[in-house]
Length: 157
Image (cartoon, rainbow, N blue to C red; front, side, top):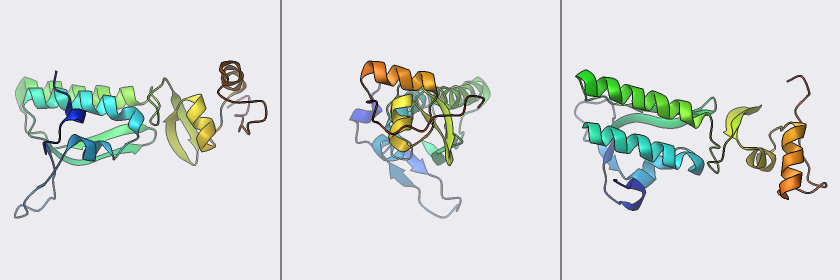
């Protein structure tokens, strides 16, 4: 299987919107820097699938928004390949809502300024609220100490 993280090849280009401008090409590592390291595998899996379908690597924006991956791409595919490609993008965006953007562990969306998808440990590190059960689990696993400052989510939230 193609491993994009290990390649320095400029496979992806940022679409400028101006017909007379030459596209600027990027490596996978450069486009993956637009999201947290925990989503790198999800993004790599998506890009590999799209490239196998014949995608030309064009994109407009890759980012996190409301706690999930957003992948705005240039669809040069038609017919069934285009349909499959759209489904692949949708699944990748959906998957990102279940894994921590920082470390890749199972997570959930958390509000605390920005909406981010974080595991309990990364939520504590970033000052996002966790619930009392997550706190107990972190204590049991030795990830935090009783002295660790933790923002607890209200019971009804």
